[in-house]
Image 1 (tube, one colour):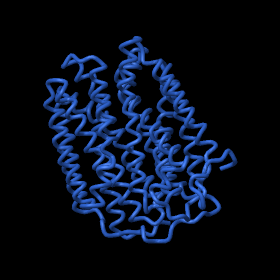
Image 2 (cartoon, one colour):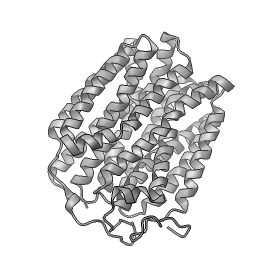
Image 3 (spheres, one colour):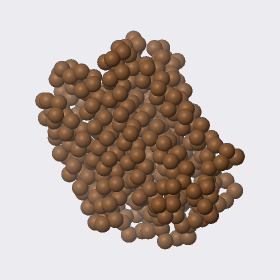
Image 4 (cartoon, helix red, strand yellow):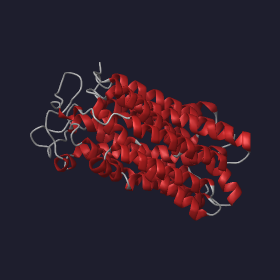
Length: 411
C-alpha cells in the first residue's frame, strides 16, 4: 500500500488532469480534426502529415527542456511556461489559414506537451509515492482517458458549431486554466528520493545499485527500453494520424473509423490501470512483452480491417499494446536504474523517441506514392516484432557491472 502524504494525492489528481487535457487536445485529436482542415484548406496528406510529424518531433527534441527547467527553476515555473506555450499553440491552430501557421502551432503544441506531460508528471509522482507503480498506473490511465474524450469532444463541437476552429479555442482555454491551477497546487516539497534504493524481491526486480546517468546509458537494457518506448509511440502516432483515412479507403464509414479511435483509447486507459495495479507483484518485463505482442496483432488487424471483427481486434490490440507498453517501459526504467537519475533518463528516452515522429510523414509519403497505407503498416509491424524479440531475451542490468546486463537466460 502506498504511504503518501495527502497532498501527494492532490498532485496525482492535478497532474492527471493536465495529462488528460493535453492528450485529448493534441495527438488523439489532430488526426480526427485533419480531414476537416484538409477539406477547407485544400492540403494533401503529405502536407497534413508533416504537421502531425512536427507535433511529435518537437515533443521529442524538446524532452530535455523540462528536466533542465525542473532542476534549475522548479516544477511550478515549468508548468506555467508550458501553459503559456500551449495557449499560443492553440491560438495558432485556431487561426490557421495557411500551412506554415499550422506547422508553427503544431510545433509549439509539441513543446507544450513536453513541458506539461510525462516528464514533470512522473518526476512529481516518483518523489511523492514510495512505491509509484500504482500512482503511475492511475496517472497514465487518466491521460489515456483524454484519448477517449478528445475525438468525441471534437465531433460534438463540430456538430454544434460547424467549425473546427472552435475546438482549438476550447482546447487552449481548458489546457491553460488547468495547467496554471496545477502549477499553484502540486506538492513540490515531498521528496522520497532520499530513501534507500529499491532492493530485489521475489516477484519484481528493483535495483539496489546507485546508478549514474552515464552507466545507465551504457546498458543494453536502456537501449531496449528506449526502443520499446519509441515503438509504442510510433504505432500510436501513426494510428491516430492515418487510421480514419486508411479505414475509409477500406469501406469503413468515417464516423465508425473515428469512433474506433475512442474505443482504442478506452482500452488503452484500462490497460494502464491494470498495469499499475499489478506492477508491484508481476515483473513488468512480462507486461512489456505482452504489450508488444498485442501491438503486433493490433497493427496487423488495422492493416487489413474492413469488417467489425477486425476493427475490434485492431482497437483491442493497439489499445492494450499502447497502454501497457507506456506503463511497463516507464516503470522498468525506474526499477532498473532507481529514482535518483530517473528524471534525466526518462527525458533522454523521450528525446530518442522523437524518431516515432516519422510515422505520419512516411505514412503520407507511402500513401501518395503507392495509393495505400498498407506497405507502411506492414513495415511498422516488423519493427515492433524486432523489439519484442529483444525484450524476450532481456534480463535486469547486472548490479556490479552495468555493461554486462544482457543475457538470453530466463528473466
